[in-house]
Structure formats: C-alpha cells, structure tokens
Length: 401
Image (tube, rainbow, N blue to C red; front, side, top):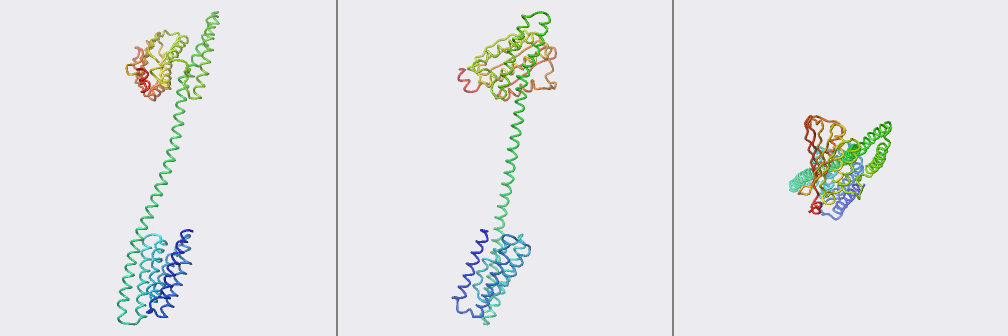
C-alpha cells in the first residue's frame, strides 16, 4: 500500500507539471496541440489508475502490455501536442520495469515507449507544418527517445541487479537462520547424548560397583550365618548398611551432578575408605601407598575423577583378574600433577582386544575430559598395570608450591 502511494504522488506531480506547461507554456503550442496533449494526459492517467496501479499489488500477465499500449499512445499524442509531455517518461519507463516479469519483457516494453515518444515528435513536426521545423523536431524526438531508452534500460538493469542481490541476501539469510536452528537442535541433541553418557558412566562407576559389593557381602553374610559365625556375619551386615548409605549418597550426587565425595573429606580419606571396602568385599591383599596432599594439588573435580578411576580399577580386579594382591600408588609429581598406579598379579589380558561395557572406555573418557592421560599395560598371565595422570590447574600449582 505504501508503494502505491508513492507512485500516486509521482503521477500527480508529473501530471501537474504537464498541465502547467499546457496553461502557461510557450505560445508556439496551438489550441489543437493543447487539446491533444490534455486528452493524452487523461489516457496516461487512466492507464495508470486502471492497469498499472492494481498491478502493483495484484499483477496479471496482461497488465504490462495493456499499460505499455496505453502509455505509448498517450506519449505519442502528448508529445504531438506539447513536447514537454516527455516528463511522463519519468513515470512510464520505471513502471514498465516494475510491472515486467523478466528483463526481456521490460526491454521490449521500453522500446514501445520510446517509439511512442518518437512518433509524438514526428506528429508534432507535422502539426507545426513548417519545413524548417520538421528536421529539428525529428532530431529532438529521436534524441529524446534514444536517450530515454538507453537510460531506462541501463537504470532498469541496475535496479534489477540490486533487487536480485537483495533477494539473494534474503535467501542466504533464510538459509543461515535455518542452519543456525539446525545447529541449535544438534547441540541440544548432543547435549542430551552427553548427559546420557555421563549418567551411564556415573551409574557404572558408582551405584553399579556399590550394588555389586552389596551382593557379595550379602552372600558372605548368609554363608557366615549358615556356618554359625554370627560375629563375622554381623560385621558383614554392618558393612552392607554402610555401603547402602554410600549408595544413597552416590544416587543423590548423580541426580544433583555433584561430586560424591564429602566436602569435609580429603582425597586420602576417600581412598582409604575405598581400599578398605574392596578388601572387605573381595578379600584381596591391597597395599596402599598414598603420597598426595589432595587439598593442595587437585581440584575437587580432579579428585573425583581419580577416585572413580581407582574404584573402577579395583572393581575390574575383583571381577576379572583373579588376583591375590594389588598395589595402589597415589603420588604427586613435581609439576603438581597427580599420578595413580594400580598393579595386580592376576591373569592379565590382551589390551588390543575389543572389550564391551563402560569400564575402561568410560574411565578413559573421564580422564580425557579432565585433561589427563590413561595408560593400561597387560599381558595374558602377567598381571595388569593401570596408570592415570591428571594435571593440576594453574591455581592448584600455586597452592602446591
């Protein structure tokens, strides 16, 4: 609607200029010329109102040829009566390019507009009737028509290029917006997948191990009761109660996504409790060598990763190694990094063989996310050694120093 108002204003302004030229124009314009030019102006305005103006909002295939025909006739008659009627070219050419679908139709329409203008000047020369005036009139008409045509085509092509550029930018913007929406969707999906992986690792490394220990201790307590060893059974049941509370704390920690290490406990205490638990569950001989100032070397997140790696390593020894002795070494390196080494005298395995489950794979992912390194060395029948190295953060190094 706003576009049509601008065109209305332009047509009114151009029409008023023609009217002023007809009323106060040069005396050379005859009464017949004024009448012809006035009638031509009416034809042009009607062509705009009845054809071009509706086409601005609801274009039809016949709108362009109808307007070009009306405008060409109006220009021929108008220029025949008053050469100043060429001011209407400022309306005719742009409207032709606006209504045209494609450059070829716009150029053809512009040619007809130019021919109408030239015919008008030829008729004007005939109306004057003077031999000396014919050549100048035709020359001026040819120049006006040619210049107007060239300018209209050049300007129209440029405008179409600008419009095409804008449309291409709009298309690219739409594609970019769609791509951004797709990236956001993929990011959400990736976040959900990572959260599922985290839950799977946490469940495997915490609750699954604790529940496995509860099952072993419960079976042991049952055997001890059957054998009449009530004191030993009571100790096993007490351990079951303690592990059950630990499992509840671990479940709450997974839900709240916080570390399952008590805030007032140092890493050394947590390692001691974990080793004691596996001693009780599996009956293993575990030699612990702890040389790590946990408060000054590792952040809480790194402590949790180290503790989970130890827990998973001991669980693997209990389930797969058939070992009798395990050596656990936790130490601080000169650069502030923490090092965990777990060595057993079990059956070992082929480290290159494919393994199912979340054990070593989940452990490797945890260590990698913490910026650390994990190395496993083992040979069938020769035991297994697992080494985890976790770097300290810059702030941790300052505290350690």
